[in-house]
Length: 432
Image 1 (tube, rainbow, N blue to C red):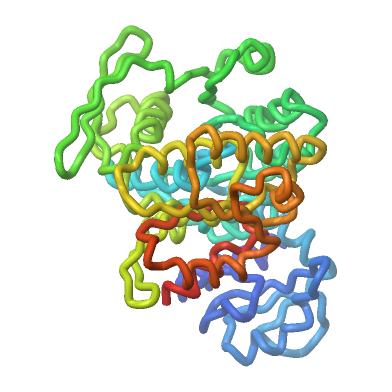
Image 2 (tube, rainbow, N blue to C red):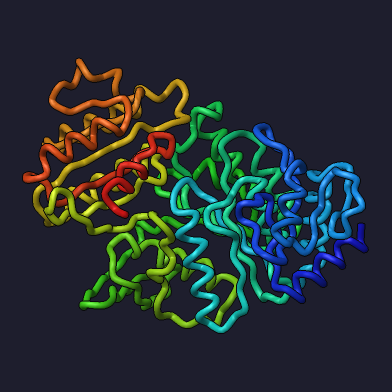
């Protein structure tokens, strides 16, 4: 095995190759690994990878093709190769998890380290399950000082597997809320599984942000892990056209940092600062939130035209939990803009508590006296007769007709919901 690992790194060094599992993403001189999943068998595409001029193809196929390397079990190969990389890496590994903001925090930490002249690698997009983690590990820059990964779990014991694979040195929990709680016995069981991020054998320092009674968490962590509640920190915020200047106190010390424009950046900036400060003492205090930290559609404002009228989509279509949806509704409601429409998708993986959390969101909308509301998905639709003051659809398609018809009364459209509602497709209809 050691021989093929060295060949892979020789090719990566020579061609700047990426390792890919999907031939559709493969470029000339990339390395293809045929991965078998529930829905497909990547080993069957070895010929296509060779035709696209992959520098090396690893598959469970025996052939005389010079670029093909046979392995009996590609999943086992990937697992062992990742272990080899982690053992060979001389830098420090940072892991980020939490119910909300994983990708934004990961990207922000990456940009902070990079802008402080550290050679830094970060995991790809929001690939945070075991396969996504393995993909990112295999494409690591072994010469980097730091590598930042996000880790996501949807069910019990996933974190244990992720940590066994990654073995990070520094770990951040951005917050623990009720996302995917339907896959766990209760909230404490969810906390238990999130906190397994600190089971790394190489853990040097950990940080948990919380906004509720921490007594249960305290029982589950050791002296290497620090607790903070950023919401409760004393903060003075000064604004200009470009930045927020944030004075805050923590552990009887005063700090001043600045952040890119945007209210939602403030807590992220503070948490990022305190987390990095815990293992790098000399760090520049400025720019603790970077606009580049928000990738793709995560929280973007997108201007477009519908029926010749200029409108703005506030795109949070990538995901939703009871906590994040509640918070973003309140934030959007406070914006001093006119002709608002809320398009809200149902939240998934809430199990027996699904009705409770969806009714909570509906009640919030009523308490705020909001009127132009479109609720999409089966979990909302079941309450159509009970709350007939709102518009309910089973999917996003009727919402398109509504927007086209009512566009003269619409300027700003807030969109948020779980991915399975496909609300991103609704936005793509209007944003080419």
